[in-house]
Image (cartoon, rainbow, N blue to C red; front, side, top):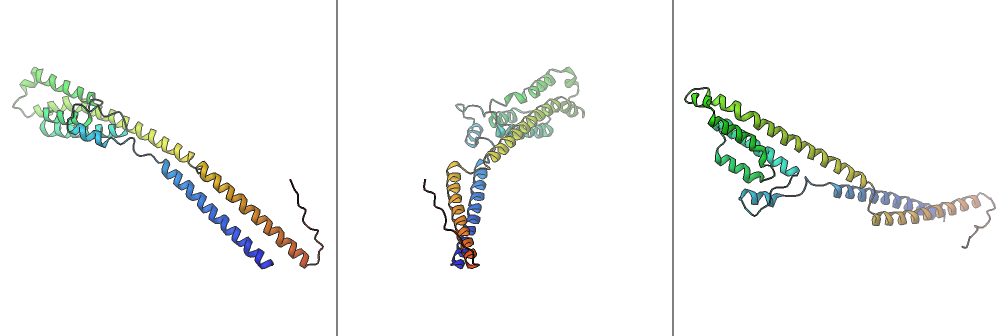
Length: 221
């Protein structure tokens, strides 16, 4: 009888360990579900913008939007460094990539380019080796300001997303109410089985040693 009770105790302890493993699994699952992607998915919207769909609204301000704006501005910078100007084709590509929300980021560059065309000093430099340097000095600084602004806003969105993910993970440290209720019920059942088996084993061992053990008191409620 004692061996059967010991086997029962071992089985209950094993089931408690299995319950703990299941609880850890539920928590890991909840944390994984709480991990949000990089903002809403605007892939389809970006595609339609790239197709210059006039009925498509502007790409909304978001993590993906600012990331796209940063990349588009750097493409513009590469084009200016290559061509010494912001061509209409490159400008169109920029607008089609980012939409209306981020269009203002290129305004300062366009104004600077217009001033270069009207500037008598620029006309004097035509045909000289310093014209390219002059254009770079006029176009690149305002563009760098826009790039820094876009990068700063991107960092803000990344920090906000990171904070949201940390909060979601903290909130997910408990399993769902349904899973937690099931775990607690199972845990209570196992504890009762364990204590009952331990008490029975103790009574048998004390009886075997010659002690007089009074019968257990049953409390009826």
